[in-house]
Image (cartoon, rainbow, N blue to C red; front, side):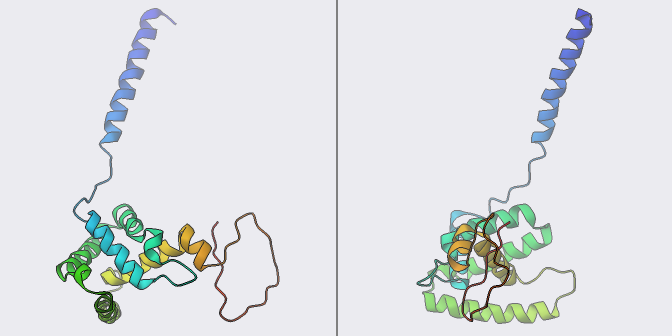
Length: 181
C-alpha cells in the first residue's frame, strides 16, 4: 500500500468512526423526566406495597424497589398510548393526594380504583390500553415475582442448575415455584 493511499484510508476510517458515534448519540431514547420524579417513585412504591404487602414470611413490593421497576418498564418498553395512560394515572393519584392519606384510606381508595378498572377494562375496545391501575398491578406482580426478593422469599426457588424432582406431591398452602431461567 502506498503512503498516500494509507493516509487517505486512515483519515476516512477515523472520520467515519467519529461521524458514526456522533450519529449514534443522536439515537438516544426519549426520556420522561416529568413522569418519574423521586416523589412519583415513592408513590409507585406505596401503591405496590398495598398491592403486595409485607408479611411475616416475605417482604412487600417496596423491598423489590417496584417503583424503579415500573419506571424502567414504562419509559423503555411501553408505547406512547400506554405511557400516556400510565402518566395520567400517576397524575390522578398525585392530584388526589394519595401519599397524604393514612394507610386505611389508601387501601379503600385502591379498592374503589380496582372496581373502576374492572368496569373500564370490560368496556374498552380490543386494542386500547387497559386502565392505569391494571397496568400498575400487572407491573407490580411482574416486578415483584421476577425480583430476587420475590423469587427467593415469596416463592420457592431452586437456582439453575438445580436438582430435578420428577414427582412432587402438592401440599395445599405451599408457595408456587419461581421459574428463573
